[in-house]
Amino acid sequence: MGVGDQVPGGPPLDELVKSVSEQAVVVAKEQVDLARREMTSKARQAGTGVAMVGGGAFLAALGSGTATAALVLLLSRRPGSSAAALGVSGAYMGAGALLAREGIARLREAQPLLPQETVQTAKQDLGSAKQGAKSARKQNGRASTRSRPAKSAKRRAQPAS
Image 1 (spheres, rainbow, N blue to C red):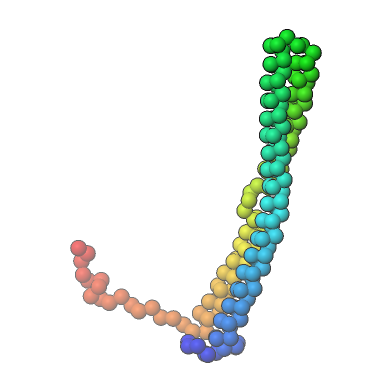
Image 2 (spheres, rainbow, N blue to C red):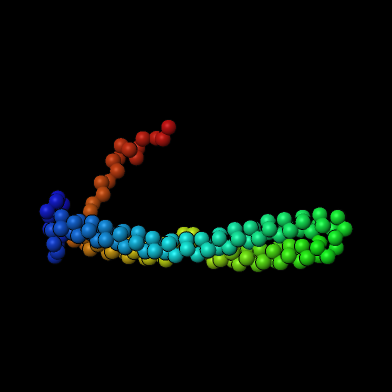
């Protein structure tokens, strides 16, 4: 069968190839757009989580600084001031821990970073394309019979070395 040949009961082969190529391009563009939208959504969610973890780390650093100030005040024998600094330090540390925990939870929600919906639709598209190719082969196989060449008697008679 050459280019321009007619598939029995259908359009010419070159038109079929052109149609399949155009459809493949459309499907590929749709898959890329779907992946882009899905990854943008996951990136937003992950970005919020990263910002929360960063904020938690900043509050932990502030808490560490005020704890150091409380220790200095305690060593200089100012118990009232050191108690206030310890209270502020505890508030910073607690808020930092809560913020970091929530940020980590949001990062876990954004997992996996692979666009799952796009992968699923691509697998479905590939499966339907394989199914279509199998049915086309079956139809072409019925229309024309293939014969395999028989092995020559010389090849069977030669001993393996």
